[in-house]
Length: 241
Image 1 (tube, helix red, strand yellow):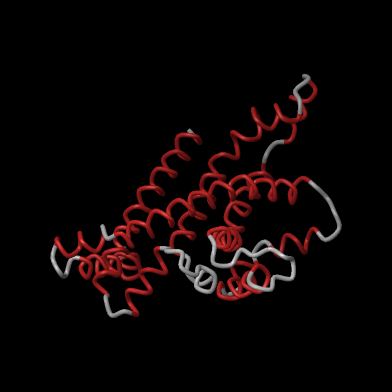
Image 2 (cartoon, rainbow, N blue to C red):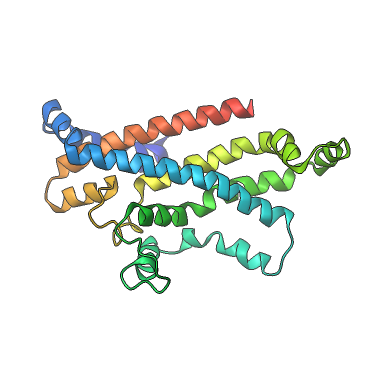
């Protein structure tokens, strides 16, 4: 509890105190400004979309890595963790070079929401993959073989036998991807342009010498993200039960 207090609770309390330092009216004005509301809405929508895409594609990647054999499998498996080690600003720079003006592939995504989505998908790739992989490894293949021997198709076997066992880990990974997306800034700072993302707006408020406004938006973002995470965790718990 002491460690949690020093690392998490006290800093969060300090942000909350700063947010309300100008009074409830000032906090409300900062939290409900048009810029703040738009930034929060865009951030939450994009983050939930990233979590949904990550849940599907991360499960698919984990399935291929566990169930299939192909040349270069070890290399691909190692690359999955690259977003954890790579500075996220490098991801933004890479996306800007690849999809920015003068794109070598002829695709211009820079300064659009598409670029934001791609950047967040990159930095959140490992979460669902690494959550699902160990569960897939431990699954009893005999149950799947029994279903196949009784005439079940591959899709039916996956939907009725495999997916129920994977759902808690998929939801857990998706929750982590959502949380990372909500707070991400490094990979976005070069490619967002005029798109209002909560983390960028907070950073701009700090640079504009408006720490109370930045703290107010931070508190609202924290509460919204916490609510979504709790709902995802409760859903995961019900599925597991």
